[in-house]
Length: 276
Image (cartoon, rainbow, N blue to C red; front, top):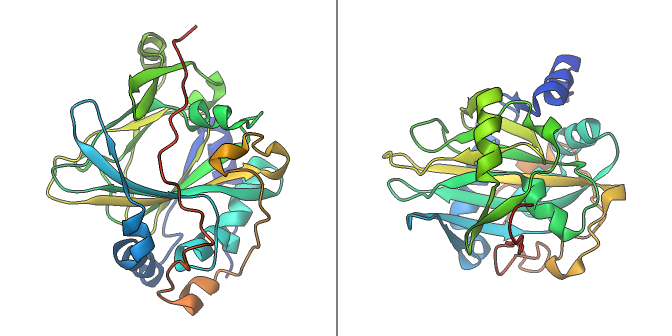
């Protein structure tokens, strides 16, 4: 039976800024996505290292279009597109996807930030955007799962300040007060679970000091009427051709053709100056 977001899940997202959809991808689909992330030459060839302030690095690969690869089809499949459109409230387009690979004993930390703290500078006028994090491995507090500030999406866009040349962070002084008044949630996921969170959700993750890797595939969507007006980073509107959920398994282990995905050559870190 096709997946359909429940009223309770929609209410949780509106209230808390996130919702976890358990087992949205089955074991066969997770295996295909995992193998694609591990074996597709385009994923490895375009990998970047995002260091934290202590020198630990998270390996990331970013691409801005959803093509016919198995991971492109995951971004275009009905259960993902329909969920994003329902939560955002209108038709959506694929804004960006990325592999975040925190390997054992070396995966770096991400400090408190909002995705819209970055995407604002792409020229998206509204925060009508969200991210869907697909767990490819078990993610828990031991291997650096995502941490969320419950309800923080209602605070609006917060000023960000430079942390390193590869990361910005939400204003640390403001974060002290936010953490005193809002609950902290560890988003622990099993393979195939999907964490959906609002673009103004404050989130971070610890470094991975465990013996287990923590790989996730994050697919981001934007409202079609919220087109990014900065074209230099290649995230402006491109029609998203929705496919049936069965397309993932039908494609099998299908890799990138090398031209559809528009892989990013660098991680986008806007020049935010100082907090006002």
